Amino acid sequence: MNWYRIAQSRDSARFLFSRPRYPWYMEHAGWWHPTLPPLEFERHEDGAVNFHVAQLMKSAPHFGLSKDDILKGIVDSGRASNLEDAEYVYFRATAGNDYINLPAVERMAIDKGWVKTSGGWGTFIKIEGNMSSLRAAMRSILESINHDNPPKIEIVAHDGRSQVLRRTEDMETFARP
Image 1 (cartoon, rainbow, N blue to C red):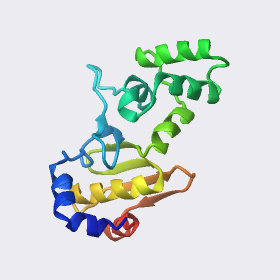
Image 2: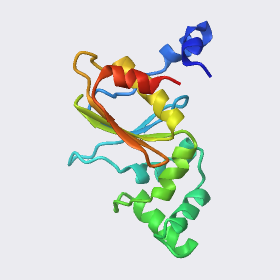
Image 3: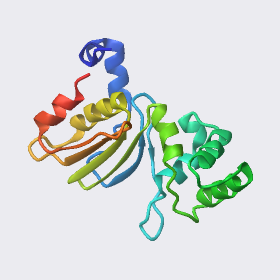
C-alpha cells in the first residue's frame, strides 16, 4: 500500500485529519494503532502511570484480545504454571497492585498492529512494534514534532532490531513504506 497515494485520496485524507492526534510531543505513555483509537495511560495522584501490560489487560477488547488469550499469554510467559495461577497474576495486574512484565502478552497486541509508546516532553520518544506499524507511527510522529529540533526516537522492532534516530531526514526515510 502506498502511503502517499492513500493520503492524496479525498476519503483517506478526511480520515487522516479527522482522527485526534496522539500526544507524541508531550510526556506520554500508551498504545498507538494505525487505524484504531489510541489508548493513553491514566495518571494517579502520585504522578505514576499504569504500566503497559496492566493497561492492556484492563482494556483487552480494545486490543482485540480476550481474557482467555491473556491468560494463555501469562502461562506462555512462564509467570504462571497453569490457568488458575494465571488468574491470580491477571487479578494482581488489573487491580493495579503489581508491575508486571509479560512480553508474551505485549507480543499479542503487537501482532495485532499495536505500537507500545513512551516519551517525555519532546526530547525522546520510544516506540515498539512490528515494522509496518512502526513506519505508520513514524509518519504520525513526523506530523506533530518540531522539525528544527526533533526528539531522539528509539525504535524497537518486534523482530529484535532496534535503532535510534536523531535527524528528521532519517525519520522520513524510516517512515517510507
